[in-house]
Length: 116
Image (cartoon, rainbow, N blue to C red; front, side, top):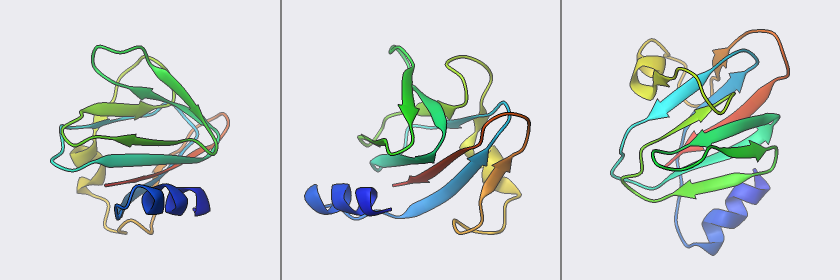
């Protein structure tokens, strides 16, 4: 998390972790247009940032993305495919941000820290 702390410190903003995603199967989370800036820190594996009107952007371990307020987007294990709305993913998840949201399945594991 040192890279993330450095980015937040350099930009003079604070951050709150809202989810830790552990995925090893097909997965995709759609984040709505939020009123705050959003960040994602890929801590293990690879994934894709998908934004309306833009080509999917591949991300790998160590990458941090910071999106401005109002930016709807998706984080996913592939450049295309279905996604689940973040609200639906977290609806039954009672562990809080310290407890990972799991997408089990075959294949390499990806871990992403999400927040705003």
